[in-house]
Image (cartoon, rainbow, N blue to C red; front, side, top):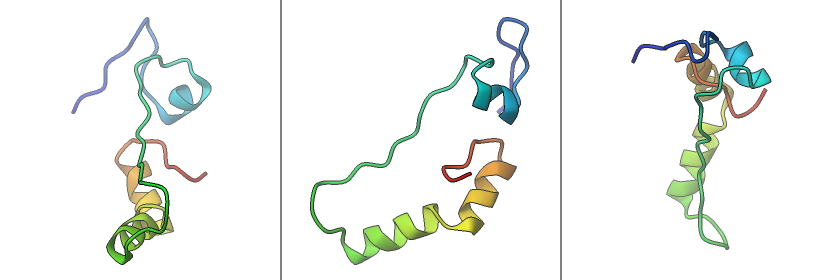
Length: 66
């Protein structure tokens, strides 16, 4: 994937966070109301783990937890 400038604003995490880079969309994880299965909970725990968040940032995405 290659980033592109939008309206003269280049991609950066800072520009994404402050809203000056307009090309973005949220990523959501949804589940049915009630308890999560063990597998689903393990996946959610991994996604929100420091290791996963660090990898997310290295890939150029905004981590869920900052």
